[in-house]
Image (cartoon, rainbow, N blue to C red; front, side):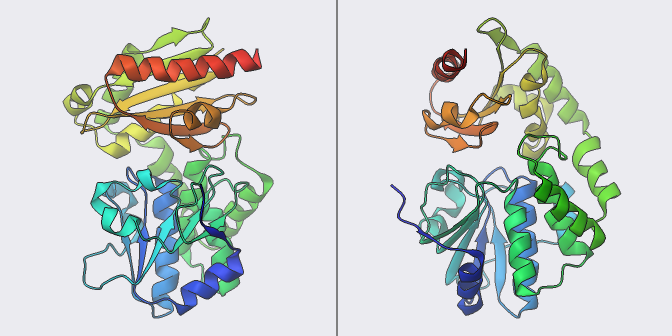
Length: 322
C-alpha cells in the first residue's frame, strides 16, 4: 500500500529549495529518461549552489557522457534523497540499497508507482519523467541551456521511441520543440540514440531473432537471451535496451515479450503491446508494472518456469480482449 504524500511541482520545489546535500537516484539498467531527468535536475540544483550528485547501481553507458553527470563519490553524506523515474523500490538495485530505503521525494511518470517515497510527484499522463523535470525547471526559472536541453530531450525522445510510441502526446512535441529552441543538439542526439549500433548490439539482435517463438496463433511473439548468450556477444546493458521492441514490431503481433537473464540468474521481462492490449496488466500480476503499452517485471527461476508464468498472464489479457 502506498504511504507517499502526493504533491505538486510547487511543493516539490519548495522541499528541494530547503534541502541540502541532495542525492539523485536513478534506476538500475539506466535508460535515457532516468539519466536525462537526473542530469537536468542535477545541473539546476548545483547552479543554485546546492551540493548534489547522481547515483545508479549500474554503470552509466558511455554514449551518455555528454550529460556531464556529477556522479556520487561519497564526498558528502546525503541528507535528502530523490528518486528519478523509479516506479518501485526493487528497481534501484542492491548497490544503492542503503539510500533507496529512505527516499524523501520521488519524481515519476509511471502510473504503477508503488508510493515508497515520503513524497511523490507523479504525472501518469506524461510521456517521460523528463516532461515533469522540464516543468520544474521552468517554474524555478532555471536556465535551460543547450546542455540541460540535450539532457531533457534525451529523456523525452528515448521514452517515446523517438516520438513513435503511443504515449507520445501533443505536449510531448511541444516540450521537445522548446528544448530544440533552447539548443538541444537534435541531429547528434538522434544519431547517437537511435541510429548508431555497435557490433555487439547487432549480435544481440541476431540472437533475439534466432530465439524468437510465437504463441496464441501468432498474437504473441517471445524471445529470450540467457546470460551466457549475452556474455558471448560482449554486449553492454545499453546494447540490450533496443531489443525490447523487436517482437512487438512483427506484423500481427499484439504482445511482444523479451526475456533477458540478469547476471544473478533472474529474468528481466519487457512487455510491449499494441493499442488496446494492456502491458501493465500483464506485468502487474508478476510483481512489476509500467504503462499501457510498455511494462516490465523481474522473475526468479528457470527459463521455462519464467516463460510459463509470463505466457499465462499474456493469455489472460488476450482472452479478455478477444
